[in-house]
Image 1 (cartoon, rainbow, N blue to C red):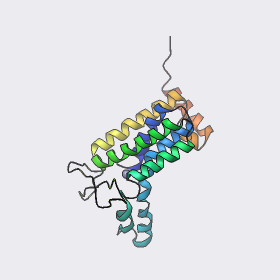
Image 2: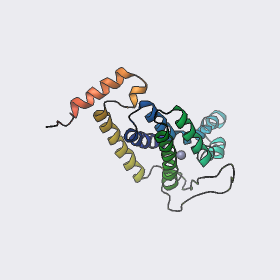
Image 3: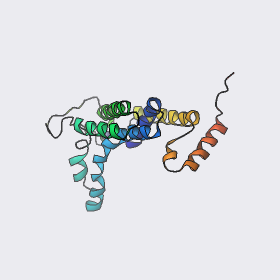
Image 4: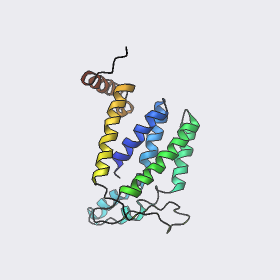
Length: 189
Ligand SMILES: [Zn+2]
């Protein structure tokens, strides 16, 4: 799936697991970071203008999509998190959810299957793939993105902060205020 969907999934789950903004950032990052192994696309554009994807295809779904990377994310989350065990377990959980999402919905535009090399680099040729994998821009991915976007907006209104908070608390406050004006919080009687 695309990185925006992974980010929204991680954020939506993290909001429910911890009240700590730092923990939420760590859990969300664990949902996104497996895709840093796709950074080779930048080198491909640099070298060939994007006509070849040698770096991308060599490393994407390898370096960041294996259990060892997931454990590394969990260790970082444990040391940096405020609620250490919850954050580490959640990081490992959303990392695996990322793999599941890629496993079911990351088929390439040419119809090629994306396999997960879960035990890379220990067993580099052992891979997990599913013949029913749908394309990365297929409708289930779109529905999931819209749903998680809806939950992200709802949580921003309900909790009083959004991902913008990490960039600018003022912009975040303005965003939440706008949301609450258009969609007022339910009144408790
Ligand atoms: Zn991925």
